[in-house]
Image 1 (cartoon, one colour):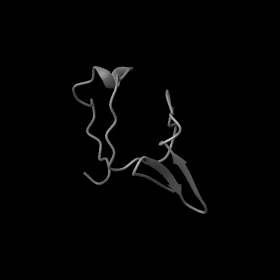
Image 2 (spheres, rainbow, N blue to C red):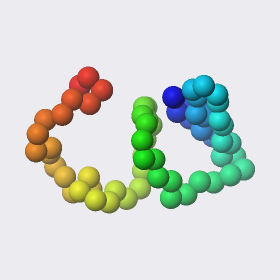
Image 3 (cartoon, rainbow, N blue to C red):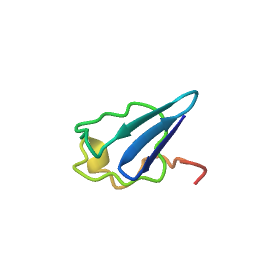
Length: 65
């Protein structure tokens, strides 16, 4: 499954394609519970320990890095 954003549209691709056009719709308070998001900027408040964490207790490899 892929998730892309371009020209105000969010598109999910996979076995089929689903597209949301934000030119006439607005999404708020969206939760993403699984999957991969690549190449996006997320703005807004962060809650939980991610908002205050400075380092991982144990090193992790994310995306091969």
